[in-house]
Length: 208
Image 1 (tube, rainbow, N blue to C red):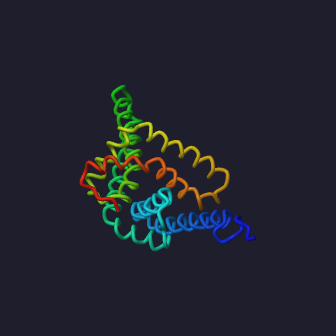
Image 2: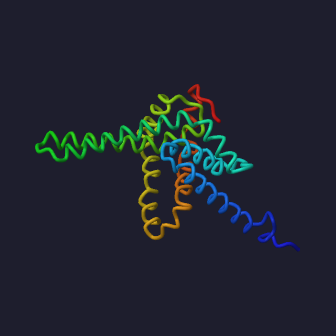
Image 3: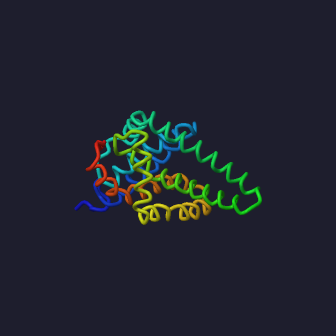
């Protein structure tokens, strides 16, 4: 009798097959992110596939599916990525300059800038998963991501929990970078898998 654990459709084979898919997905994301300007599009494609994995949808080819999403979302994802990067940079530089200024007003302005930077960060966590799943304009992507991130702050905290874990794991061994990005995408996709649905139902956005 064939061992159900060692057969082609057995437990161990499926585990190794999944590990291979995740490793491949992480490597593809790293490769497509090398130009830096393409990080937005590659991250959207990453979430497109991690979302399918979480929802247990069929994926015929990791690379083909990644490339499909990368091309489809390249323009909007790249524009959004540039906007996020530019605004974050100016706020960060402004915070450094304000921190050198004396007085109570400077401290208040610094706190406001810090809150703004945090808002950009949590909006970023939602915007690429949203782009990966729905046809949405750039403006609506920003509005929806900002609203959901603040309206469902407990969900946002759950998403944020991964970052200290990410830092701890990566500090132990840099080898884990081969998996850590895709694990983060899976975590976010799992947390958000039902969060967008009710908003999509009352909007004109079409699911991919």
